[in-house]
Image (cartoon, rainbow, N blue to C red; front, side, top):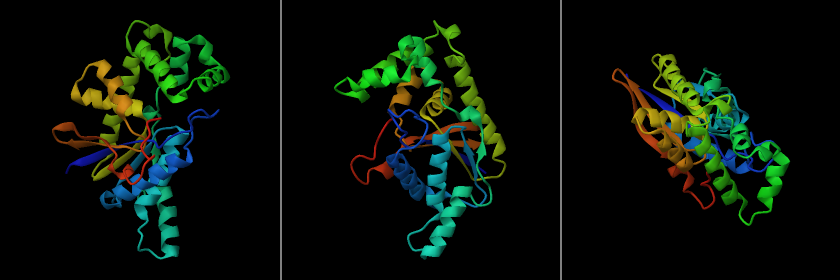
Length: 251
């Protein structure tokens, strides 16, 4: 039987806050909309895996709860289903695998611009820009190019090749863990998803960075695991976010 590994990017995090690693209100809504859209696929024997970050766990809680709740349920049944979803898929609570964690963006920025090891300095400089999001994107893209370029690997605790190997190992482990499960729901970040997709497509390293820029918050990527190995099925699905303007975000 084919198992589908569902790679879910976390909902919008708290950009500009002192603690980025938490969902915004919009990020919670995105996660619930994704769960409702995926509900027809969910089954009692499914497995769920979270990275070790708070935004991964919060996305899983919102998404899994929404998978269980139907509009036609009485109020008491909806509340019970929501609590069950927060605990996991059926009787299987999510397991934590920190190999699905995002790269250390703080260190990557600081190696590119040492003054931005001070978060307050970074925030102040961004606020002074006419478009803080665009300014951050430009800065971050340059920092990522330095990290993934191969010339400065010794500057980082986890250079790009080590990060990519960690993420592909996590994917292989999830496939092995599936057993006879039809679905494995994996809550992670854009970097790991881009790294494993790059590996599955045997694309150049630079392509992984381009893939990561396109990933939408609370998007859905599918990988099929069968006897022939792992195969990319869909990438960056986000039709569930077209319900109204403002739901599609990238940070």
